[in-house]
Image (spheres, rainbow over the protein chains, first blue to last red):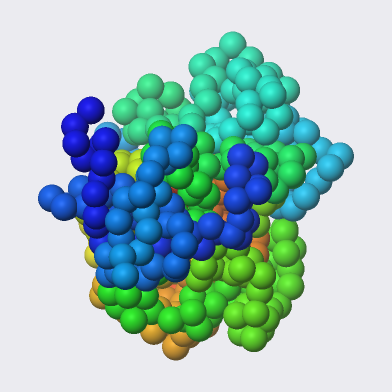
Length: 76
Length: 386
C-alpha cells in the first residue's frame, strides 16, 4: 500500500450528495453524506463526510478508515 | 455486412405483477414478437436474452435456455447477456451483429427483469452491484446517489437547476399517461415533483425511475428476407456499443457520459447521419439528470444546455425533438433487463405510425439510447423506415 491509500490526507470535494434511501447494509446510517474527494495529484476517492456538511470546492481532511471506507471532515 | 431489419416486436405491460414470474413475462413478450413478425418458434436460429440480475432477484440462473424452451425454441444457441441496465440493448447489439455477419437469419431477442418481489433496500443493494463494490458502493453509494453526485456537479459546472431536472419528470409522466403499457400512468405537476420525498440530494423520488417487472422482445433478420415475413419492416441503420470505467470516481468528467458520445459517433457514422438528422429518441432516463446528459452527449444540444432545453419544451411530444414519447423509464417503468429492447420496440412503433396518442409527427428516423450503470456500457441503435 502506498501512502495515499494508508492516509489520503486532505483534498477537495469534487461532488457530493446526502443519501436518504440506503442499500440494505446501511439502513441504520441514513442520512449520510457521500462525496468524491479529489486528493493531491488529482486522484479521486469516494468516501463519507462526517460532521459539518461540505459543498463542492470545500477542503476536507481525512479522519479515519471504517471498514476500508475513508471518512473525511470539513476543514474549518 | 448485411443490412438488418426488425420484423416483429412484443412487449408486456410494465408494472408490479406479484402473480407473474420472470419466465412467463419473457415468454409473453417473445411470443408476441414472433406473432407480430409472422414467424414461428421453430424458425428461430438463435436466442439472445438480456437480463441484469435474474439470479439475484429470483434465484434462477441458466436463464437463456430456460426462457427459450418455454417459448418453443429448442436446440439453438441460447445465451444471456448482462450489461447492467444495458443488458438487452447489448443482447440486441450482439444479435444484430451476428445477423449482419451472416451467422443466422432469424433471431429472437428478449429482455426481461422481475424486480418487485424484493424490498426496496434489497433492490437498491442488488442494483448497486452494477457499481464498484470495492470503492463507491462500500462507501454507501446507491444508483440514486451516483446520479445525484453527477447532478450536483452538472449544476455546479453549468448552472442546471432543480426545476430543469423536474421538467424532465413532468414531461415523461405526461407522455406515459398516454401509454397503455406504462407502469405509472399519472400526470404530475412541477410543484409535486419538486416537493417529492428526498432520495439522494438533489434527487427526489420524482427524479428516479421506477422499480418494475416486465419484458420486451424483437424479431430480427436480414433486410433481404424481411418481406417474406412482414410489410412493416424497420431497418437497423446504425448500432454501436462502447464501454467506460465502472466507478464514477475513475471518470475524468462525470458530467459527460463518454461511452454515450463514442457509441453515438459510431452509430451515426454507420447510419450515414448526423445528430441533427435524428427526429425523435427514446433515451435512458433512469434519473432525470440522465436524460439531460443523454440529449447533450448524443449531440442534440450543446454541453450544458440540456436543462434549459428541457424546461423550454424542446423534448416534449410536439416539441422540436420529442424525447421519450413512451413515457421513458420514469413513467413507463424500468425493468432493467427489459429496458433496452423496450426502447427499440417503442421506436419501431413510432416509425410504423402505431403509437396512438403518443405518435410523433416526424417519424422516419429514430434513436434508442440504452445505458448501463453510471455509464460503463452504452448501446445506441438508430432505426429508420425501409
